[in-house]
Amino acid sequence: MDKVRVRFAPSPTGPLHIGGVRTALYNYLFARQHGGEFVFRIEDTDSNRFVPGAEEYIIESFKWLGIKFDEGVSFGGEYGPYRQSERKEIYKVYVDQLLRDGLAYVAFDTPEKLEAKRKEIPNFQYDATTRLSMDNSLVIGGEETARRIANGDKYVVRIKIEPGEDIVVNDIIRGEVHINSSIIDDKVLYKSADNLPTYHLANIVDDHMMHITHVIRGEEWLPSAPLHVLLYKYLGWSDTMPRFAHLPLLLKPDGNGKLSKRDGDRLGFPVFPLEWHDPKTGDVSSGYRESGYLPEAVINFLALLGWNPGTEQEIMSLDELVSLFRLERCSKSGAKFDFEKGKWFNHQYLQMADNRRIAEEMMKDITANGVVTDMAKVEQVVGFMKSRVSFIKELWPLCSFFWIAPTSYDEKAIQKRWKEETPRIMHELYDVMAAWDNYDDIEGSEAHVKAWCEQKGYPLGNVMNPFRLMLVGELKGPHMFEVTAVLGKEETLRRMETAFAALPK
Image (cartoon, rainbow, N blue to C red):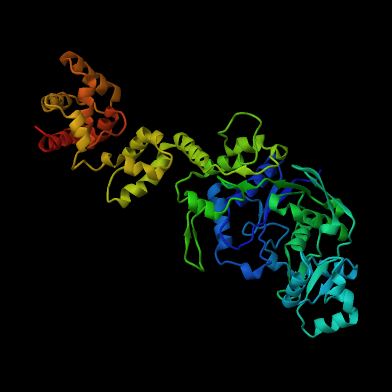
């Protein structure tokens, strides 16, 4: 078997949809598992839909996700150029070959004529039954065709599909798919308006010339597969035709249909890897990176949407995914986009993440709130608090009290926990904490205070809840002696003194 070569070929028409990310991920896993190569190509043959910045956005998305390409646009390689708009002359060679062999023809039909035919014939299709009633070279002949082209008339080149042929698409996921050619229309392969091919021809030529062995793409491309099989045949490349694998769609979290940006806006989750600023409208769309997801959590989450390893294992590193991935284990049916599960994955990866890494991100929020601190303290707080959150951005609101002393105290907590005898007990606790120096010893601090409580006969809750209220301002936070370990002796005693002045005597 030839060396495995797969490709991901997005169009620079806007932000990269999360479904496209999953397609790229499956290609990457397949290539790595087989010791193959992963090619990055840009499909920019539809010049009217080009969006400035989209190509750079796509590259930056994969850089953040850790999905690496071996060759292609911005990566180099021996089969370039990898941007389709730079391959015009290459495609024209094969357009001319198809015309010369009588497997394609030139059509001059105006948009107005095509629209009139659609109104005249229900479910109009440009094919063997209608082509001879249209304005094309099969009707007007070669001389008139040449004259009109020389005159500068706009035209397209259409593939000539012969009806009644059984076309077989061998799909790794779906098995043999049989399509009768009679239902396929004479698709446009080339447009003189911009001297560019359409998707159908460009991809076949590129896949052949770049030695692509497997085409792994979304289910929405399955209807075009029979046409691509025919093109490989027409161009004499049947022996080099890649294996196809059409992946299941990503479906709405609720209801039916394909996942869309509107679903994300409606339910409050991103559908793009990075935040997208639309250069035309100025609209800003949320991204997984800016929403606080870790890239490895996004990868793990996406991998299991439409594929499973055949075990109960859910948490898998990229290397484990490479080892376990099998296209044959992809589902034929669509996968519901469970965004709550995505949050669960992020929580799991936060717990596994190095505290320093999280602390560096949290430091941005701390600095933005005007607080000056050292990284060691932030790491310590992260170690105590990360189990309580799913996103790094949730840490600062949850534990800002470690840096900002309370200036008010929760009224409900005061009514519930601050009893008549509490001030006296808290003054005694103040003396106990003042006599204790080893605040970094969390277990030692706890044992020290518990021994005092037992000696005095004080219920632990009657001591710890008011103590927490004095240091935090409300009844929240981690273990009480994790709080004192971070605050240290001086700040702990200072906060108690402030609380004595503010709380009921």
